[in-house]
Length: 89
Image 1 (cartoon, rainbow, N blue to C red):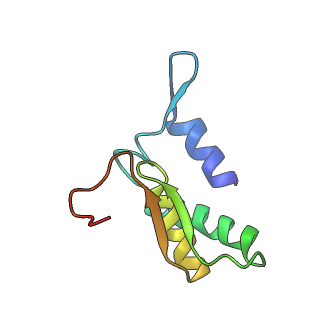
Image 2: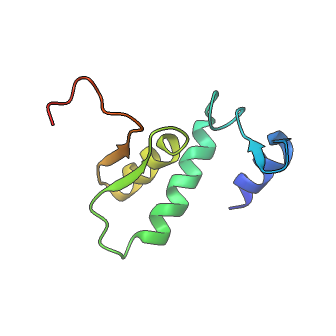
C-alpha cells in the first residue's frame, strides 16, 4: 500500500526503539481517505475468502476495519479490553 507507506514516512514519528506513532492519521486524528484505501486493499485481498465479519482490536484497528467491512459488505466486530457495562453477557 503505497499511500500508507507514504503517510508513515511523512507523518510517522519514531518514539523509542519499538514504537512508531501514527497519531496524525490513525489514532488521535483519522485520515478517512487513507483508511478507505486501506479498507479497499484488505477487501480486495480477502474478497474470495468467504468473509462474513471483520474483527479488530478496540483501538487503532477500528478505522481501517470499518472501511474493510464496508467494502466487503459485512459487519464489524471489535474486541474490547474490558467488559462493557452495557452488555448483558
